[in-house]
Structures are given as structure tokens and as C-alpha cells.
Amino acid sequence: MSDDTMHPDNQDFRMIDALNKNWAVRREIHARFIKGRWENGSDEDIRFLALELAGEAGELANLIKKEWRGDVIDQTKIFSEMADVYNYLMHLADIYAVDLVDESNRKYVEVDERLRAQGK
Image 1 (cartoon, helix red, strand yellow):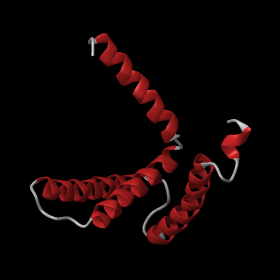
Image 2 (tube, one colour; image 1 turned 90 degrees about the vertical axis):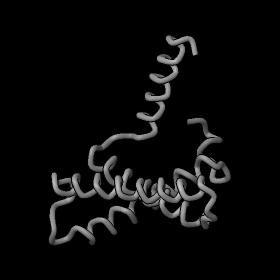
Image 3 (cartoon, one colour; image 1 turned 30 degrees about the vertical axis):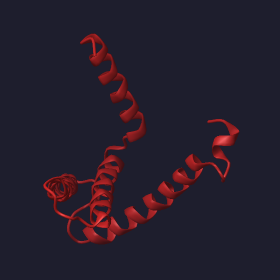
Image 4 (cartoon, one colour; image 1 turned 180 degrees about the vertical axis):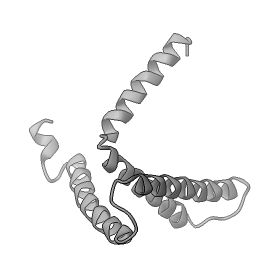
């Protein structure tokens, strides 16, 4: 990163700083939730997080479906479900020690190459 990228007035810096703070809070809340149930990162933990992720994604999709069919949906409900999906996905990424930014960028390159090969 360039020096100006890490300047406190830079939007990327603010986002990274916020994500780092969010990570600590997320880990602490998750540890309190699973205490006495199972170990962090265990098979049970991974299954639980995957099911929670699927459930929250379903709730988000349901709100978007309702909006699509013409219902008036409070946008803050959609944003809240997006945050839930994000948080469970980030928990799983923590357990698997995966950098989702790197993986996302790798996936964009893969899709771009596939579309170019198809002439799109």
C-alpha cells in the first residue's frame, strides 16, 4: 500500500480500521455465545456458523423478494440482514484463516477469464 492509502483521512484506511475493531468485537461475542457449547473452530462451530449464514442469507433473500413483488420494506431491515450475513461469513473466514479480499479478487479474475473465453 502507498503511504497515502494508510492516511487516517483515506476511506480505505477508515474501512480497514473499522473492520479490525469489528473483528475483535465479533470474536468476543462469538466466544461468549459458544461458551459451554463447543470449542471455537470445532466441527460443531463450523456447522453452526454455516447454518446461521444460510439462514441469514435466506432472510435477506426473502426481504428482497418481498420488495421485488412490490411490498414496502424498511431498508434498515435489509441492511441488518446484510450485516448478519457478513458477520457469519467473517466468522467462517476467521476459522478457515482465509483472506476474503484476496479470494474475492482471485474469483473475479477467474470469472473474467471464463467470460472472455466465452466471448463475453
